[in-house]
Length: 225
Length: 296
Image (cartoon, rainbow over the protein chains, first blue to last red):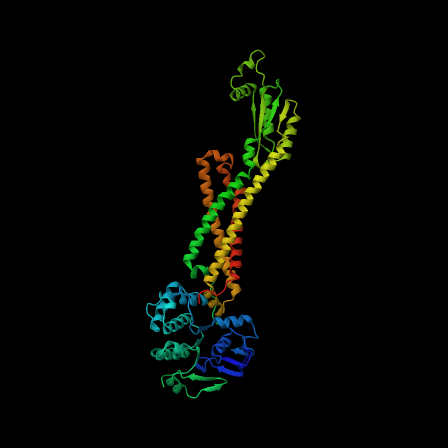
């Protein structure tokens, strides 16, 4: 369980939001929507333990991320996967490098196994044989999917995705929904931050919980609605 | 929560080609530094060169029998600072004189051989100091068979000072090259840290502490630095051994090839490898510190 208590951000000389409470249960796929510049990326950073909130605290499995043991916070970050909003990439960076980085951040995996898992994950996100492709030459959708596949290589317990659904594009929504359901059924937690939720997903999720400038949906993970 | 990732040889796993280039370059530098170090260790700076050219001559009295003179030479050779003590009788001295000054045979005409026998004493290169020369010279002067001791004491301090300066200059140049290696290594480490900053930021975002990363990189640099220095010094030693055997005249300045395996030389080489390891680790740590973001 990831809980945010009375979270507040007072940046740029103003209060972005304050006193927000969140609760993301385990083994679930959560969808947070918010307007542009509402602080979605910031919220994910706070939940991941990468940015201390100006007010409030985040508690994971009963342990405070920001007021507790620093080693626990590091271990939490190590157990998380993160697909950021896509920005410029180094011209030399290849898709294979993304997987190599991801593998280095996790526990040691033999190279042969890593390559085999890389191929399977790339196939899953419809990027067969993309290992040698340069990230800078990929489309936004391809970048998003490559980053997602690379994060999944480590098998993170919690996956945070920032603008990934919109970035991947409509043709891949079905695949992503299936993937999130599968991850949640295996006991993982997925937290997505987007400007808007696909209509079919919203219908399946039901009424969202309003939290400050955000709307929080819980996607159904058992079967298809 | 996941177990800790292994950070050993992380640079090697992230960026092999530049690392191989750097390793080859460092190996070559260590080869050159190894040749310089071993030459300095063997030669003792300028000591061997000077010791090869400096000798104390103990001129014996005319009536000293050869057997006693040889016994005295053996006793002198047993003194700690002495490398060799060779007795030359009057006949040998005369022949040497004629070789040096041909055409002076008539000098021997009426009175016979005018030259006395003598003992030529050479000092060990590592004991060529004013105190040791004094020790040998005063020991010889106290012997009744010795008429005169020619130790060049007037010019000796100047020669020793020049030798010391040459030795310091040699070690200074070696130190400057070592410092140059350190600066270049630091730049290389910094360039690599900048190039891999995106990867390091990625790892830091996923809970890998930056300090642990820096520590493992420095440890890896130290180990590779030690191994490269050991390989470079061993190669340099082999090359020097072959050169000394092929060109024996070099022995006069550097020393015999067998000295390469003296415990003192080996200890110096091991110390050099340890220093190379420390410098590599320090270059890694200093290069890491200011690394801004690199590839995203």
